[in-house]
Image (tube, rainbow, N blue to C red; front, side, top):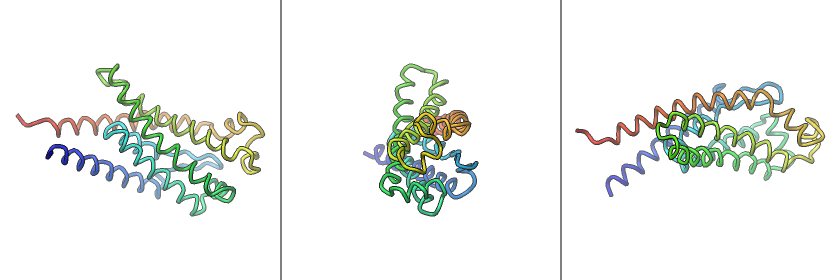
Length: 203
């Protein structure tokens, strides 16, 4: 019973620390790099770290924090988010939340599956982080086209789904994927190793 309580406390503490980091990144230049209509986000990094090192549930919670921060920025007047908000607030909320929650679940469960094959865990951390980053890109852009594809605002980027994807998914997706893979994977590995050392009984 005591071990279970300690485990839950550690889970909550680690998740809270990563959520705080995520919020700091949200409201500082560390979280976003905006270049015209293209936005590069590094907020996937705390999400995949939590998903891999703490668990899929932690990743989902952190993804929800990421999504809520995105929606808040749309409300506060972020040009792209504000435009979507004017078209349909409900769809905007769904678009902000759902893909981000699924980042954590995808990265967390991918890691659990990968370590069954990759016993050394050399590849698992980076691969799971990459899956998280790609989940964000694919589901966000896919949801954007599904929910807002017929809007005049989105059609300024192209008249077909392929044209819209080509306009919005440029070097930003590659940068996000590379940074999340290496930084997220490396930090998740360090956090996982530290947790295992802490859990190891003293001799």
